[in-house]
Image (cartoon, rainbow, N blue to C red):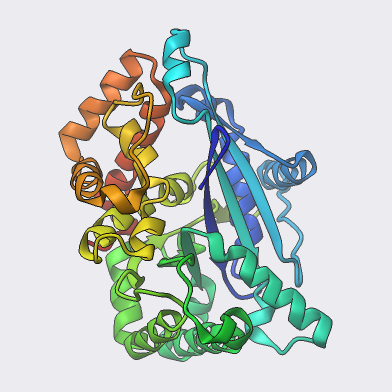
Length: 385
């Protein structure tokens, strides 16, 4: 969704209490404030709420201390965090003027784990839970956290934990359905990519993302299918829905007795690429498969046109295509080519963008390269459907 000169992408994170959501968020933001990050990237990451940013950065610095401190746990805290990705100024003022947008905004929705684990205390909290879920329906990607510590606690009987966890997600979402859907009508705008992510992955150092995927499917494959059925009941055109097809390893740091190595993170560098670029390539594929001119196709391609122009290096166009529903026959093939850009072609595009100080294109091609590298390192699997 584009708001003025800012393109907003949203990500929702679901996890039980204690699954590490606050630590993940603090480590993500703190890492972007390190001088090495600022030096290596053509953009800066800034918290839109100064108080939130200070708190997250303080949490991160507390983990770095000689006597490390973990962030305090939160209870029933339904909070959204907004981060602006500010591009470094281009040397050529004309290049900046040609950008279709000047900044990306990542909105990170943190959904309280307690609302999956226990009943609400009354009508007021029930309404707050419904309102919170409605707010994150604008998300492009959702992460469902699996706690590595609880896998260890149930070693040899992992299915007991995994089936229980997925039942909580299943039942929690099902309980909200009647309050969310007006007259039972499915939604066009809803997270359509649901990624299973192993939090605290440092506790299982020998587990790669394929091992994680295989564990989930072998121990709780039926429950994953049932969860997909529930989510399919929320969305119009449920074929354009991915649940349990993408997998990710996440670790906020390397935790040792008396020491936390915050530089040894896993997967957190993918939060921006996942929110910005994974929906782009997936939505283009789905829109191509849907009936041309449908409402869902229009919704899926909402910001894809703008991203496609940047990736193909034609941001200087003075006018984007006409309303999507009238020109899908032209737009989809062109976007499909942009979405399939990969490997050396993608690397060449980033090299060219850096040489031209086209920081927007450099950032977006860099995000897509980050996803490719994560697959090579076996910390990420993305669906090819």
